[in-house]
Length: 385
Length: 250
Image (tube, rainbow over all chains, first blue to last red; front, side, top):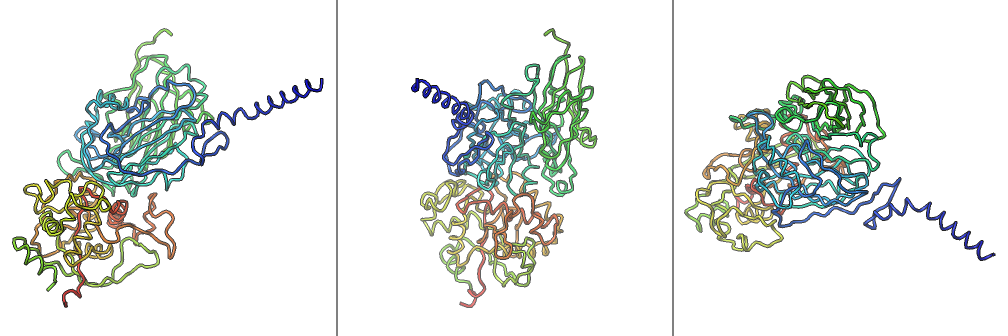
């Protein structure tokens, strides 16, 4: 009898311990390095970045969940995953408006750079080589590259051409929580940096070069978006028909020679952009509009990369059914006409396409729309669901 | 006369090295305040090469100093790209003799200058000369800033424009290569302490004597060069040498 009660007690104790420790155990399993620790289910204390030299001439963008704007990779896995991601930094001639090309500083060769999609709690092992002193071609098929390349090649609206312009660069992921002077440190041409970060918070985050002058480096084209999908999703996930990424930014260019534009630092300091674009070209979303059908629920992840301006994002003819500011599902708003985004703010936006037709996407600060911050979504006829 | 010139003249008579230019010293208000407690500094007179060192001049150096040839340089002193645009250990591409030499590390640049009886200029000496150059050439502050940012934002491939090796005045301070200086690694301080942010997050105004486009452009030159490693050898980094005046009296 005594034995039985003891075993019952110990069994219930064990069960109690198990139930208490279950979440911790699940989290502990994700810890990889001795330095790591957990607060509120989020992992901190990642190991120091490594900087080294490597012979590497392979694809400049590696990872299955890296796409070119406006595409977003599907997360075809359950739970959490460790992503091996490479995004090399190098120069590239890109077009931002008809007849307006400049020698951009880029991540991956486009402006904005590739979109990375992960899930809240995922680990990213990130590598970046500074290849700014070599020519890197992104418009030819590459083996073992990310889906980004195929999408650029299918729709090369920036007419990306390799150029050489050596410059120290760095990578700052707003989606990571780390000591910046370590992970976001600057590397010289020829160097590679490798570090890890955990997608602790859901949302759509900017990444950019943080090397001085940070104004010049970002204005030269070094930014992009990371979409961290919430681990439990957004409430409307199952009803979403289309999902796109849109990055707004300003360009400060002046003509140096026929068709050859250069950065105008005075204009950048004065916040007088020559162009404001969605996805890096004044015609990115009018030559190749987003597509949907009447009655669809469309989700946009909108990031305003700045570097210095705001965006009052609006879709003409629609009302935002739900808005998750910064993409965090807890920051839920309803029924908005316009979302105001400061530099490096984002929002995840759902809207219903009311009728067949053309829906213009604009920065409702019309001085910006006039400079190029406009695009379109074309809706076909209603489909039976 | 300066010892190095004599040596060079005897051994390499085909190469006529232009005399370096005298930079008269004086008080200097640095456009970028490396130490915020020192708004003005005194620069001593010195000599400075009129132009960046050319491929041809560097070729003579590696002929004379084989351990600084491409295949022989110690791994410690470069990043693997040292003189990568040359055709061989002692061969430069055709028509490139009078282009500024690039793909040279800070170590190599220092060694070259030492072999000429000189040294790399200090950051303050170089910037002091740059201000004199702007005055001599009558370059307005805005034009200077524009040109400098244009140079940084344009692709400068390994094919550089030439310089006049016989120039008798300061030339090409801002439009050919970014130049190594001896103390190129920027250390911004607050009195005895290293500054916490050091202009790394767009906080450059704190380090400028006045927040002008010209000073911002200068600050950008300081900062972008400061981020290189002393081993870095790139298509846009070159150098010129400075010489102490007392050599004249030897």
